[in-house]
Length: 343
Ligand SMILES: NC(=O)c1ccc[n+]([C@@H]2O[C@H](COP(=O)([O-])OP(=O)(O)OC[C@H]3O[C@@H](n4cnc5c(N)ncnc54)[C@H](OP(=O)(O)O)[C@@H]3O)[C@@H](O)[C@H]2O)c1
Image (tube, rainbow, N blue to C red; front, side, top):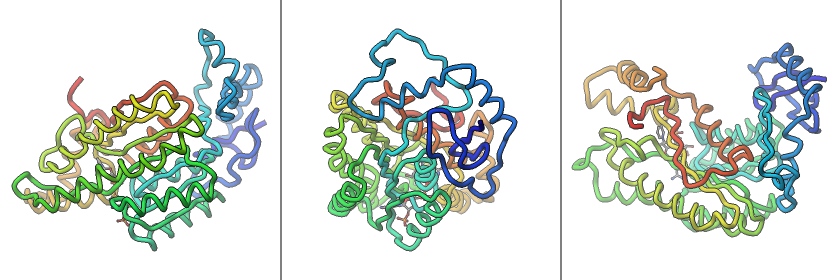
């Protein structure tokens, strides 16, 4: 028996994990298989009961599994194959035609979720959605919209609920505000930052919470920035507006925990996306340094001495949405390679 890692295509496509049936039918191009590792995992699983089978019961949303009924029992997790329990969930990833949003949409699809994506540029969004559909043979719903438009967010969530029957996970996101110092930022820019980076989260939360309450299960994950813990120079709009999102996250977590809804915030550090290149350009012009020097300084700022890949932020979001993070709410998790200097 062989194992296939659904994200990275380990082992033969179409082969089965014990206790699972349909896995991703195809290994995405460029991903490699590691049959030796897969064999090692298989033989280990043959000797030990697969712990994740118990957690699959969690997908029924109503009947607690044997493990849930027995809170003092300890579980030995398989270190290689982590079952996320996300298969079949409906996940919204806002602002997802590129960058971290796109990587997150792909990561949820790879976990077997049905995913809804949006962005303002419809052509680019559709191309991104089609690539994921094609690669994973998955159901992906796309709709062009501006997340700072409350009516458009309402229609989007309605359409998703109609198509997929529910909404389980909602990742809120929008492009970051421009890099500015305080006196350089206009009032109009402040309003836009509040609309896109704060109110959009309010709009999504208002729409998705009733769906989640009905199932007594839900995850809202806001995508913000390391600036929620440590202000970034020249990003005054982000520094100020993201803090409001954290206040909202904590309030929602407190108010809706009783409904089985977990609300958390993910704060990326410097991550190699279009947004970062844009930031490098503006810093380069302002500081008279090359873009390479700007990137090198960012990398050096992190304990890991590199910037992140979008996939690394996506992995943290998927984990927070998963059954493996079922007692975590109201938190900000930084994915910053150790750039935040506090303790
Ligand atoms: N990359 C980093 O280093 C970094 C670090 C810390 C925090 N962040 C934050 O993380 C978030 C994602 O960053 P990223 O680097 O992935 O950004 P990105 O590469 O610029 O991508 C932004 C995505 O959001 C969409 N979008 C922007 N404004 C939108 C709106 N009003 N309505 C709907 N969709 C919208 C864009 O598509 P359209 O333009 O077609 O709408 C695009 O798909 C941003 O808020 C950013 O500030 C990024």
